[in-house]
Image (cartoon, rainbow, N blue to C red; front, side, top):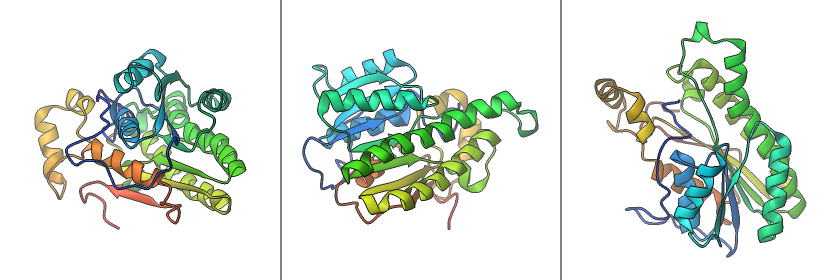
Length: 272
């Protein structure tokens, strides 16, 4: 599991202490978030729901996705949980078709799903490398491809990809394969942004640093976590709620001149 986590136990929250980000969004927008059963994905889904979106929380763990959606909307009207293996392009097509049948359209895709296995760089096996890259990079590519084409056909869409500080600075604490995959996510974001921009579709990325998620505190010893915090210029871990607010802003209707960008939120660990 990665320190620059896409996942981890975190209850979806439609609103936080900082309130909702200021956005301009047409009513009845529909958003799909991958890897949304827990962690950062659940937080993003909760913020989108709180901003008025109908939200599909998808995850490899379908039961957990359904439970997370029920936490947001017990009546199931405006939030649903669905199973989705992002390594399978056809699975994206099926989920897209389900959402169109249910809500009439999809307007936003957040590619958040990811996986890592912390292991020494020189001991990463071909199978391990392939597994991590397929979950992080292949999944993002398939999502952008399937929904990018769909959005382009409609003349509107927002895609937000979750990259990582690890992909920017070559950090291997979360695994060299994870860093390589997330670096690829940042590049894919630019590629799809150029391709889809003329069709009214924006594609952007967010690159979080170490987030204050339960999974991080479970995996990292307190003394090691203290050293990590001390190394961050702002001397604190990131807030997943803020990353979620960034995603909501990039998903908004009026975010139409921001595309191909990668927004950093790493506490100053990587400045450029």
